[in-house]
Length: 79
Image (tube, rainbow, N blue to C red; front, side, top):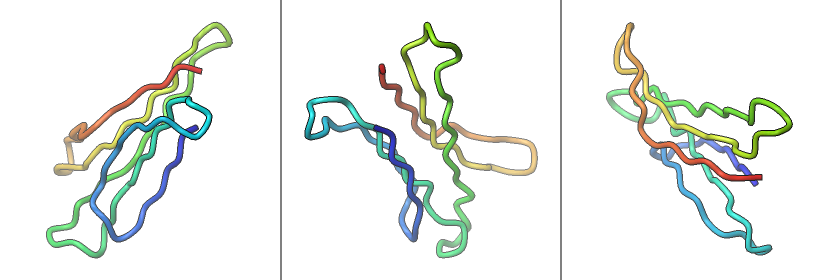
């Protein structure tokens, strides 16, 4: 229920109800080469930590400079 893709689009993240009525996360990592200045965005998947946990988290980040990373959007779904 997590879909990650990247192409020549802006980085984005959104949740929708799928055809089975369960929440899904769609994350687009964006592009590094087709924009000026380069967006330097990426997606991080944080799966549940143990078998008792019920939440997976997906976050879109951006490299701001050599020492900083900025969180753009984040979403979590319960499994």
